[in-house]
Each structure stands twice: as structure tokens, then as C-alpha cells.
Length: 236
Image (cartoon, rainbow, N blue to C red; front, side, top):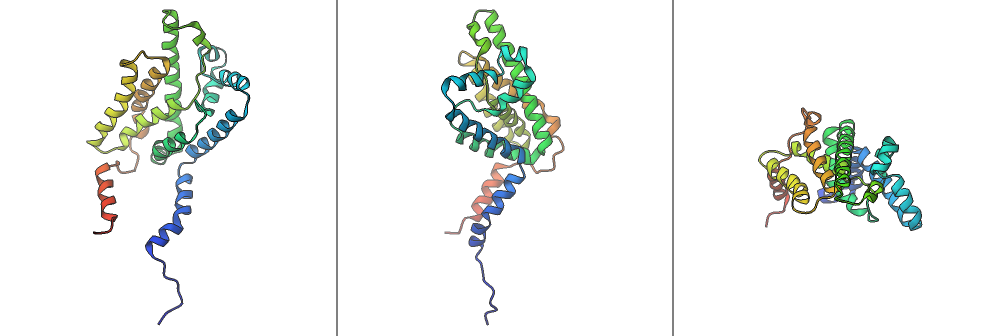
């Protein structure tokens, strides 16, 4: 006898439940997705403004040597509100793959502290390297007012800190990839201040281990995730 209730298959339940899962995922990483929304808005502004006006605005908000000497706090903040370019969607991918999981793991406060430490320290060290290059006549003095905006130092710092989220022995492979990619850009090519900043940010992220110590989440084990994925596949 049918009791009148509607039977829903597990697959259908998963399909109907995806909006709730997306909302829950966003709610667990509010800083990441608010920041991503701000970047979407400022990227739209980049497309709308006349080029001369945009270049003037971005130089004003850049963490270059001139602006750091005159208004450091302001530019350290405003430089985080722009992407270096006109294409936003790669940042969506990177934020979802790295920053959102890091915020859920660390908590929003520790996440913000780690990101800001990486941003400030990497900016100061990279601009110090640039100043040394200018003094040694290795680059033109016009770089005193170079455009230097974007979120990459925060992203790379958080990517470095995520090393402690990964289970051994995969952790060492991940660490080698992070430091190898950042270090190769400095050692194998003629490094500019941005490449030096990325390497510094990765090292600062690793140095932020005290912020990751004691977090309750189980270390991420890629082999375990692969096993779970295979176990969910239908049998042949």
C-alpha cells in the first residue's frame, strides 16, 4: 500500500541540495568570497574607466616605493582591492581551490592575519630589493613609481601555509612544488621585484606555522580522497 509520500532517489536529493551546499560553502569562508566579490566589482570598473584614468588610479593605489614612502598604510590596503589585469575568473578558481579551504581550516581571523603578514612582509622585502636594484643601476629609476597592485602575495602566502594542512608524505611534494615554482622564477630568470616577493610570501606563509598549530581538522590526505572517490563510483 502506498502511503502517499514521495520517494526521492539519493542522486535526485544531491541535485536538489546543491544550492544549500554552495551557500554553506560560501558561508564557511566569508572573507574569501566577500573579497572575491570586491575584486569582481573593481575588475568591472577597470573595463569601464578610460585608460588614462585607470592608469592614474592604479598608480595611486600601488605599493610602489613612492607611495610606500608617502602613504604606506593606505596603499597596503588599496592594492588588495585590484587584480593585476582585466580577467577575473582565474581568481575565482584560485580562491576556491586555496583560499576558501584555508579560511575554513584556520578560521577567518587567523586567515586574515596570515594573509596580511604575507602581504606586508613580501611587499617590504620585494620593494627593498627593487630599491637596491635602482641604487645599483640594474633597473631604471622610473620603477620608483611602478604599478604594483594585486593579491598575489596574500595568495602565495596562504598557499605556503596550506603545507601544514596536507598529510605526510604528500606534504613534502606539495612544498617542493610551491618553493620550486617560486624559486625557479627567481633563480632561473632575471628576477624582478614581483618574483622575489612571491618567494618571500611563500616563505612567510611557512613561517606562520603557529597560526596553523592545533587546528582541529584532520590533515588532507590525497590518497584517501582518491580512495573515497573510487568507492563512490558505480561497480562495472
